[in-house]
Amino acid sequence: MTLAIVFEQAAATAGELMTSLEPYPDVVFVVGDDPYARRFASLLRTAGEVVELSGDTTADAARLKAAGVHGITAFGDWGVGVAAGLAAELGLPFHSPETARGLTDKHVQRTLLDRAGVGGVGHRPVQSRADWDAAVRDLAFPLVVKPAQGKGSRNTRLVTDEAAGRDLVTRLLDRTRPGHETALVAEEYLTGRGAEPFGDYVSVESVCRGTSVRHIGVTGKFPLVHPFRETGQFFPAVLPRATLLEVLALTEAALRALGVAHGITHTEIKLTDRGPRVIEVNGRLGGNLVDLYQRGLGLDMIRVAVEAALGAQLPEPPLPTGERTVFQYYSQPPLGASRLTGVRGVRSFLPRHHVDSYSQFVKPGSELPDDLRSVFLDRIAGTVLSPYDMEGVLGACLPELEFSFAGPDGETVLDAATLRNINNRAVPCLQGPASGGAEG
Picture 1: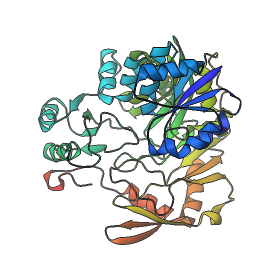
Picture 2: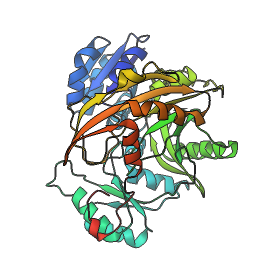
Picture 3: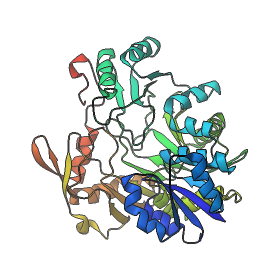
Picture 4: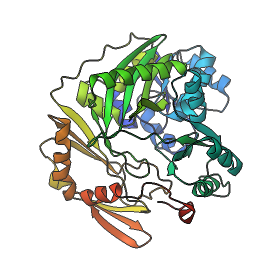
């Protein structure tokens, strides 16, 4: 059976796809006109046919039909929308275009969740200063301002003051600025309950087919650093059974509210004193989960998505033994850094007990974005007997890893432990008019 994959820079890397797709001889890669796709076009052709999108969905679907495509899937938000349009033309199982919009537009998603009674978060669309003024009349501070469409927490800020928020909204929507946003969402901030040393949120990895929802696992998280940047995850999550059941029930209700009937999903859930609340639902695999679930369950999540797309029976996920925890830790650059200029010390802590691998994601010399998104400089992957042992492993190896950054005051050299402490101490929000749109 022939499978189509909409390819982009997404949760499944090109290398991971090549490895996981070895058992599938008939693959068609659907690519758009972007630098990442062009970079890997030659590699993709070694594994299957490459179809370049023309912009005409009907014509592109006809080409896939001629290639004998039986299923389609995607691993990124842009691809979810593209695959939904193609699947609708071809009559293939995937998210409907309406569901895809709910999975990729945060305002639409919140609205659908509210209608189904599983929202629990006040929100308003913001496309102008006037929209912001209307939002603050209806919502209580603190508020989270985020792009209606986006990933990696790009341009996502916590705001506690009306004037500071107005300045922020004005700047983000300024069409004269490179990388401006076209639409924002203001949401009431969900205050997490104390969960130290772990983060106050989890993600649920699920696969859906028709009316069936199968939860593969619940992923624990390290605490975020300012403003909403991720620093790591682990499996299995540490949750009391009652909370676990609440989280799974909420996830299933959210998937049904959005009309999800096919494919793999990644649902982020905040743990609050009022019970679990949906942060967001994604209609694709979560980032870095291929490695985590391969080590944690011996399960290839890309193949799970592929099998679901080809109509195979939903997998019965293997149960974690409870005898070990697998984890990933990501170093984030300090706020204000404009370029990574060097990395040293990797060889000094590898091999090391409890550290399975080290991956460098950002090469020295690379420019760093200034939109506050999560930037994973690297990934330390490890295995411990208890989740409470993760900090000991990181405490031993982070001081031996060193980064250097270019910034407004010249070059700064920081070991990974100091870098972590600096990020943890960052000012958490915009406090008032004096701070305007500047970074906190």
